[in-house]
Length: 170
Image 1 (cartoon, one colour):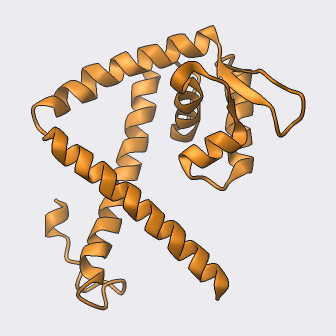
Image 2 (spheres, rainbow, N blue to C red):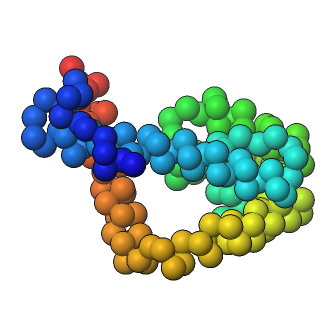
């Protein structure tokens, strides 16, 4: 479907190099929204808390390694600068009983961990993800391709972040 999208008639594609970048950006946007819908659908099979895709990202990240995480760590790992939205997600997850505050010596040092309920839900989420997504990917996508795509996305993230800092100079 994306291969049929012409990018040479877009205002964003004003040179040869910008055409594949525009096509990639459009593909990433479509992927983001598809991925967010998938996360919500997957989570809704295991819990009815009404979590958003962003909430699910925060919950899964807090569960990662089963070690306490500070809000600054969560922000950094998700490459997000909207701390107020992350604070909202953390409050929501706490209210739902999915995470709890750990070290509260100061607001800056407060850490969060998944509760037993949060561990159970994220484990069920992982099992559902495996059943419906991972198993279907297994025969359709080359693992080396996935690894290369992940590395490319990581490099592009750095380039976009660099471009952000350059635009702030203007």
